[in-house]
Structure formats: structure tokens, C-alpha cells
Image 1: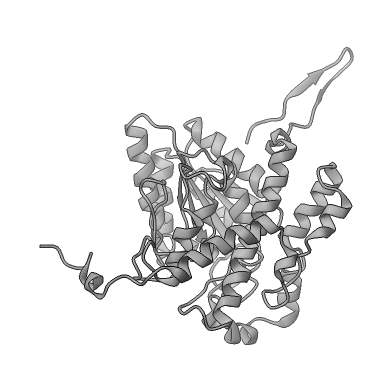
Image 2 (image 1 turned 180 degrees about the vertical axis):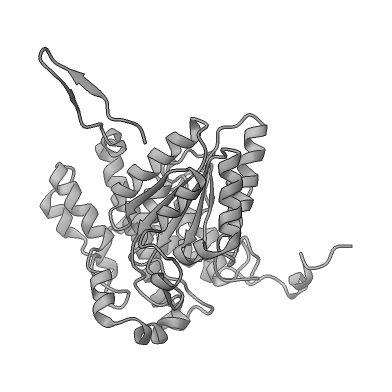
Length: 372
């Protein structure tokens, strides 16, 4: 978002390539990012398998093939920053502030036990069995409660950081949306408000090409959703949603812009939805999406893209890159051996906790419904 620095020599002045945000990450950070991609993928794989085994009810919204967006947007944040996830971002609830330690009870993110209890509708879940998926949040962890009305969270996010700014804070908020939500009036009203007041709202558009069953061209008149930012005089960035480090770079640019008091931005992450809108839509999706389009959309697996980059940089050996081969495998084909053991163990802890937990008592049915 700024001009590259200049380098002056005796005879001429030339521009040098600016360092990318990723270049300031340590080798350990790079490997942690890969491990978080594995974890987001395994969360998806394990729950799909549990559903097919009959051990889980309710609707699942897969984030398969979109993990680079989740990890790449969350990794740059401070613990005190806010997020506003949507239904396809379920791993975001426990990935937030993972840099502070997976087992750190004080980190600013939900535990895997809480999230799995939510999925299984058990005691210990934030929603107390009122939903099995993402309609949860945590003021203490700086997670805005999710809603199915995409784009409707943007004005809420704007209000959260407006209050933070009035209280002297420097938090930013990432609000996640699908490309279809950019056609709604509330999307434009909220971003206009954020732009006028220069609020640090970063709108992440997960452009997976399909708004439920509506293709992008029937919901947006331009090929790039990010160009909607032009009307508000704010940056509109486009990230390769399959490349976790490109997503990281774009989000870091937007964060620096926001913390400098320059206001909001839109980041379009181009990706592809691997399955149906939800598992209830898988059979229908196979009819409204051509098979060759699906194969092309899933051809650049985020885990494979990340591995290649790490090998090129010398952070990962070829042998280690081949050790766990989760990439390019659907939920049916992937096995536990395709993932690092600590990833499998972390998810197992959450699943075991949820299955062993009781359901809330029936007397709770009226809780949060009526007020005396």
C-alpha cells in the first residue's frame, strides 16, 4: 500500500523490491503455519467421517480447500484483535491466537473441547446445544458471535472497533464474508460507514465462486469482488486463497494500514469450495457444478502449495514434505496417518471430550428465550 523504497548509487537511483511481511517470519513460524493448515484440514476430515459413521447429527459446512484463508488471516493478528467468523470458518474459533500455544489456557481463542462440544451439542459448548455449528462467539476471547446472515456482521464489527477506538485501543477486526454477501445492501452500508469514520475493519471475502448455488457472475458484475472497494476510496486487495503466505502478506498490509488510522480495506481471497454449501447440498452441488470445474478448483491444494514453498526456502526437507500426505485427498480418502500425530491427538482430545460429555438438562430449554 506504499511505494517501494529507493536505493541511490553513484550513477543512478533504482527501486529495490520491498520485503514481504512473510519474510519477517521465523523458520518456526513457517512450520507452525503448515501445521495449522493440517489441523484445519483434519478438523474437517474427522467431522465428516464422524457424520458418516452415524456418531454426529446436524449440518456440517466444510472448509476443505479454504484452509489457507483461515490460517493466513488469523496468524498475523494480535491476541487483542477481534474476528467475526462465518459458518465455513469453524476452525477459526480455535485457531485464533494459536501462536500463543495450542495448550495455553489463557490464549485468546476457544479450546478444541469447546468447539467440539458445540458440534456435538453437549454441555460445555458455548451454545448449550441450541445449534451444532457456528452460531457462537466470545466477548472474552474477542470473537464476535457468528450469524447466518452474511454481511450482517460487518456493522457489528464496525461498532466493536469504534468502541475500542473510543476507549483508546488499537484493535482491528477481521470480518469474514462470502462473495455473494457483497451484493447485499448491508455490505455497502457498513463498509461505507467504516470508510467515512476510518474504522479498522478488514473485510475478508472468501470468494469460493459459488454463493450456495449461485455462480459469481450472477451476483457481481465484475470479475474481481475487490474492485467494490473503489467506491469507498479504500484499498481492495486480491489474494491467492490457495497460498497461505500470499493471504498472510495481504492481511499484514491491511493491518498496518488500519493501525495507522487510515481505515478499512477489503481483501478478496480467491478459492474454491470443495463440497456443497453444506453436507445437505453435496448431491445437488454435483449437478449444478460441472465436474471439470470442481477438479480444476481443487487442483491447487493449500497444503501442497505451502509445502512447495517451504521446501524451496529450505525450511522443510523433501522427506518431511512427503511424510504426511493429506493434500489432494478428500475426506473419504484421507487417513489419520496422512496428518502429523500431534494434530490427530489434538483433535482426538476434543472429539473424546464432546462424546463423553452429557447433553444439557431439558430444563435449560427456555434459557435465553424469555426474560423475567
